[in-house]
Image (cartoon, rainbow, N blue to C red; front, side, top):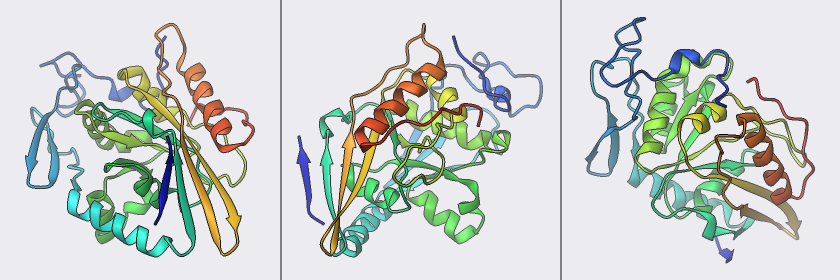
Length: 266
């Protein structure tokens, strides 16, 4: 596919149990609960697979592995199958960090956003997705090999292993995609689902990059414009709600849409 480029912490109900303890300390509610506050992982590279290993006894933690060859093969298939129907255009590529960790926060217009995001960025990413997609063992393995991270928004405590792994991936410089609306809102802005985002931005100082998606029919093909906005940084004197609202406004502007009333409790 042809691609052109123009060049005060708020704890979320249900995720309080994820608070980190001091190094070497246990939360006292189970030997698996305490994790180092410094969030320093022990990355181990085995061939093309990145595996996050953890200190101590964390047998319940998931090993979310991303295989480079699977990602590259998938990108090739996406370009091949999408090219007859879509023309991809990217803007604001200079806002994407080359080495450091970042959080991509895209508009969610339709399911095509996900594969198009994969080929719009120069390197593989991790993607937060609803846990229902991982219920089938074969599909779960395939999704994880491409960077999929399962998340149960309704019961976030069941996703604590995924959230821990996601924080560690960010800590070693990976890029993670989170769709803040949580589901499709075609041609309009949905409310921002702030639970997981507020947890991340309150723990890590990293760039939050808003991403706009715009679909426009042109003859037999659809032009898709993916616009990466200027990074937003969470300030200590600013609440997580205010930072999320700033991000949602930027996403709407990049997508040519108006903002919706925010929702920050899920």
